[in-house]
Length: 187
Image (cartoon, rainbow, N blue to C red):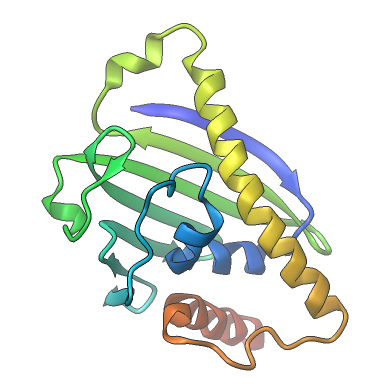
């Protein structure tokens, strides 16, 4: 059941936004006031590739996938509403939060972001008065946390920084996306 849809113009390059969306390792550091509040910071985050541009992040029960040319899909396995089932594979969870982000290049350095959040439980919540505004507010807050990081990265790149000079293992999916994008741009 779709619970929230947002369309907004964001002042960041679409590829940087996609890379951020594919990098779950930033969640316990960036999203401390929203969905990752209370998430433990693990000693190790493992990415298991299911496909070239998709996989799961352990110990978080989250599956991520890049769908060319500009969409990111995520499925979060939940123990209960708002609480992840740490250590589980998303497929083993009974409840899921699904997110679709479509990052459309709109003009140089800007992206038209289409966002849809759905859940495979609590379908009744959709008819609660005002719930749509609540979901949209939460989604906008999460996206705002991401945009602060991505806008800073874009600014550093504009001043000549090479943000991919020293990728770490957590960047695996974003690096794969960047290689795909560079290859597609080269024809």
